[in-house]
Image (cartoon, rainbow over all chains, first blue to last red; front, side):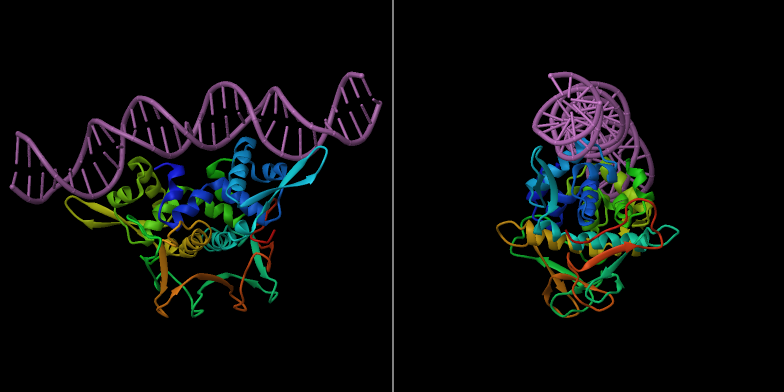
Length: 160
Length: 160
DNA sequence: CTCCCAAAGTTCCGAAAAAGAACCTTGACT
DNA sequence: AGTCAAGGTTCTTTTTCGGAACTTTGGGAG
């Protein structure tokens, strides 16, 4: 299966992976959430090659995750900002941070803490059910085919 | 920056990406959550080459995300199952499903629905604050350095 | 006017990884 | 002895990546 076939799969994970399933893309998005916006800043912070960076930014813009905004004229220069579609990726990033904190933390503990503005406290992101508000974990979720289901594989996140 | 340098970064996103920041790895994990366990089944469902599949499974086992469990003797055969560390990736998969459903759904609507066993309803995963239970979104989270912070870049998931 | 600088890319080349297909191993079954 | 199944491994070819140099647009210094 090739990269460009992914987005046509009847699977939301596959479709999402077709957008962000690349290490550089995820790290670029992490930096976007940290308010990094310029080509050179991404390059310096990430240690990515300019070639790959340009490619990924182009891809993210064409997918509507980032937009290219001019920040000066003569010479015209652009910066990259998250669109609403891009901001919606926050839960993905939060989930990645949480897992890394739990399972990959170094000797010093977690590198970063998350503070919830609404209550002012340091917190962990917790996933709950939109219907009853109860906790969601690996053992209390079932998947079933939805209206967009097709042939082969369904979607996913059920227990082992 | 090379792949193997990622896991030493003082960033939980980077460390997590060093484990799952690869499209095949994420799709393999999706299938694991759907109770797929055997080499041939992964191969058939994913359309991945055997070479890459063997490599990714080996990597996931060595990282403690999957474990190799014998399911028959003579000839000895193994299957792959999520460990507790692997099951903890569920929020990541849920976040990917949710984003795909919202932003990449095809004409037919969502391919799969999630059902919460505790309340029996179809639901969306929602991220809330572990402290006050309030909603978490792109605009009410601040990041600050934690005990494991180091030199360069902090972590991540703040608004644009 | 010429040189130098900055930001944001693009181009080029050798190295690494993925796709695709064939081959190998263990043991059961016929 | 021949066939089948599961789970890999070994090729060869095609893509992608890393690293470094080059380009473009214009400002500012001498």
